[in-house]
Length: 242
Image (cartoon, rainbow, N blue to C red; front, side, top):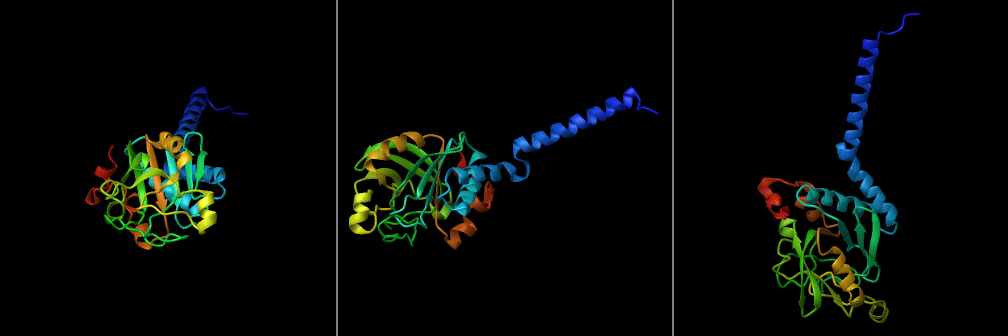
């Protein structure tokens, strides 16, 4: 029986190690979007009440933002759900766990029990869709509040000018919903229960993304963070920069 020479055995070992190392690197770096799918699957398991399609879109937008900045938490608002249903999830991305699952209000002119209309226009009193990053806290007439910076161009880039912020509100409660058949409505802000506003804001005020979803065809087709992340012609890169 002829055995391979030591040199041939060494060559085969080197080739095997290179192959295994390349595969491990590809897996670790998320080659082919594998890591994005893994994250979406993990968040779906953590939040079984959430719509998997919404989670998948949120993680796609998150991947876009992460090209330009560090992100530690992801908040997902599903405005397709009724206002009396908890429709805000906050995820810890390192632990892939749910930190908050809350009621959240929509804008006065967005709808009643169900959200139907969205706008980026100042004075519309409507909620805006899309991807936001948190942009600092302040204390105003709604108390402790968290500014949001919109990253999806014509869909939400007026958020700061419109003072679209996360804040607490007395009209966001189970008691209000039971009495009125819906939550109260804001001037476009994603308002939450007063008692949870401070811990929520303190958790997501830094290095955080907020993703507000509704099955709006125009937004789904044209949102920069979902469609053409980093395309210089749309200005997406500059908007995403810290």
